Image 1: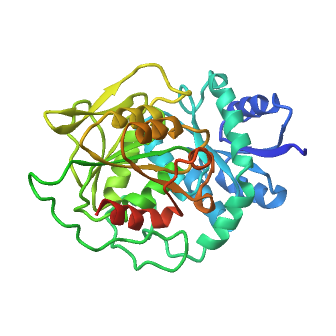
Image 2 (image 1 turned 30 degrees about the vertical axis):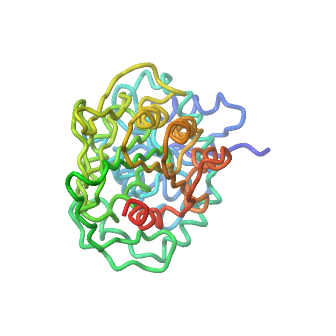
Image 3 (image 1 turned 120 degrees about the vertical axis):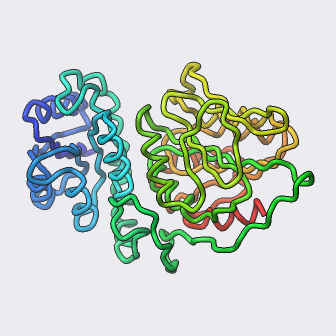
Length: 377
């Protein structure tokens, strides 16, 4: 197998060398060149056609977001962002994922991280995983370049005018039909659970922004993401969605028409308290390397009684969610939706659920909102 050819981009000469040295420790990776800013990165991508790009966000001449936007339009390739743990860094990282970045790795101690080696294994893992998506990314990009974007400028966090859906697989179908009001005292509580990982922020945008404001169930969401980033994700999605989207808080009562995103670093469980659904957050050991874990969420929901349940598994590496979904089906009734391989950034978590025989419905990500509304209705 030929080596994975990587271009490293960072404005710091020290960071360019250290990142290159880390990647070069893996025998399957070859660092073919380095770039000092976004403009130089674009030119070297055109000349060298790397398999994967690592891209810093904060750079002079041309920043990482501007370079990313240009590359995904004109020269799509898998891109792993290097992000700082500041609020500004988290916001920019969420925007980068919207624009098409494969994933991100956080710099442990700011733009010049002398301890970048702490995330060396994760960086290598992300680069290798990104490489496996290169062909699919380029095919999907060819389709998406013909599609009107969800908002005119994805970097502007404002409530958009919902566009007219177009007949392509990547455009979300916006649901305008008003959901019927729940009849007090008659209907059982309803709960939608959703788990996703790599590629999840963009998939969540497609699904959540297509739901009507009066969607009749709360949505409990686990997105694999470190602490400090999930709040930015929730705030960004909230600006784009008709439903309310928030980072969940411990003890919060779950209400219809709201999506609750687990905070990074905390497991998210749902409990019944006095007949109402309530969030419970804790920091027990990571499950399968993840905290929050989809399995932990799903397993907690499996123990709820007299609740109508739906479970969604979307794009992501690994198999998180499969054990939890299995428990949900063993202990009660749940209807599952699994994202189709054709729209997954990484067909790992959905594949695991399908292979385990747990998928009641399989659908491209843009079809999930309509399907979900039909099932919940």
